[in-house]
Length: 326
Image (cartoon, rainbow, N blue to C red; front, side, top):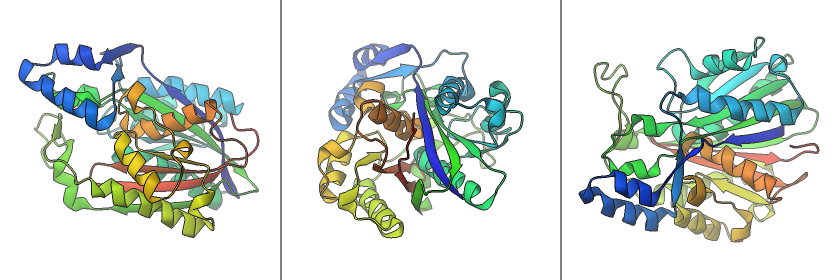
């Protein structure tokens, strides 16, 4: 059996925090950083969840919408996979919390924790489960991001952190839907950006996000084209045949650089960071859902999703969209 994508969904919380509003909240000496990041990334605003919400609360409405669009109920799910680096807890897994909130009583669950590469990694993992297990018919994949909860109020890198969630349902099918995957990592970059307190390396440390040192631009400028070319080689297609390429939504200039390197027209990608901020583990699924809603891909389209997260992890999947996608 093969896995095919049958629905997508996204969720944004109601409260908007524009760059101007963020500047007003930051100390005067930090406001210039917002100006620089706005120019560098293209981000203009972001949305913030209520203070009482955890990641699973953001994930729940996206998951429910994806199930409704797929025409299935929660008790038809066999597996729930949540990709996030802002979990409800270190343990138990956020996926099991979401499973209970959904009422997906039959489903097994697990989390994928490779930051902003989590969504394509989870899609590839779901496809493997479907291929190897006759009992797996429906898999829910969720990407969710609540990084603002871990940021210090005076830290100007709050600029990046918008809350949001995305979801997708994959179904067992006779024809290939997920047709290739690719992954790379380099743990030498791990100390540069992360939530470093609260884990076994520093159990007593406060779990706050810390941006220690920038990544060199070529990590994504070179890494994303490499992932796309590997997907093409493994999936048996030419790069020029890609109808839609979606990348981590953090820096518009990087996406333009990568599309030029791949010799693909800019119309074959999609950007949402200007309107929703950087939504990390959720952003690729959110951008895909928005692109589909705008008619940028349809049945038969060849779509690649490429994510890059702190650590660093990079991952990509290639999809051939089937009939009946919602």
